Length: 211
Image (cartoon, rainbow, N blue to C red; front, side):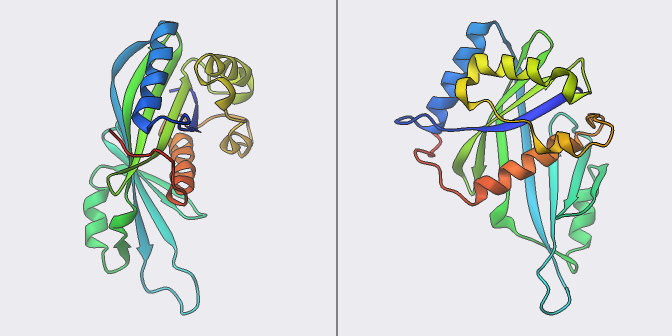
């Protein structure tokens, strides 16, 4: 895996989420991108139980990515990130006296994968409680793990199908002391999805019914 950027794409005025996604698919196919199956990223939220009185409850986010089907990622709010095998979900059930699953906050992103030369593109629809919340686009430049060496190229490519919706330099890139991306276990990618999911939880998207 290479340097990856995850961003939100606004729903086109007068169109639904699905209609906007269809337009993005068409633009990618016109560029020559080839569809290569589907993908899914999901996130479940857990509240820590038994905190000191008066202190806010710590949140734990457990995430899965179809690109790494044998692993899952546990991201503590403002804290460390743990990568574990798929049985971590079973462990969370055994820890229910310490962590309570906020089932209503489960977020899921599903969509199509495309390949264009050295780029891997994923266009997804984010849903929460079966309602469409928004659109994500993930772009990976596979040959490179140094964001500063390929960001201008990635921006130029994204402009071909996102236009003015091209994102700014992702904050996760700036936190790396050596300037290197962490592609081996998807941690940087999952942090970008988590940031976007939390943003979408707080807002309503016009025309968001998935049809």
